[in-house]
Length: 121
Length: 106
Image (cartoon, chains in turn cyan, yellow):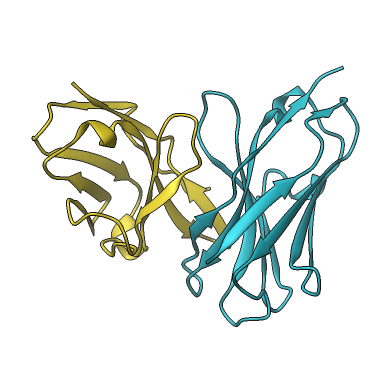
């Protein structure tokens, strides 16, 4: 059974760095074809993809946010970490960690429980 | 960047068929995936690779993709189908989402 759980601060001050951790079980990020990613959803708005990391440590980032994002994995801990620098109020959102399948044509077949993050002074 | 266009809302009576569209340039050449998001919950994959259903998704959910339009069809709509639906593709090393469609079951 695949599960993912996000953890991190619920409140972040503007200009600070946000660090979110995804702890997963039921699969290995060493398995060919598997990736783990992050997606967010501002209140009342559409889903927005942020980043993903593949089993072979290849990484992809949203072009519009690439300069502020870093994604890493620790396969020994079954964790993926997303770092977002210099956050602002527009980064207030629910953040999801996802298990992805598909070679090239990636899709998210398992989602975490969600982590609500508010950016405010 | 690639843009996916969905109608903001669709309404349907129980027992009828709902069609939710997702438009994009030559989207027929891409694999389209659909997610259902009930209020206050995380999205759930309901269709992947245009028309495949994950285990546990009812046969009432089906998908098609051709030309510049992909469509999610929900047959015999039930009250529990009242939710937001999001389409998604992979383009130029990025995941792209549509704006989402609110399906209202009357």
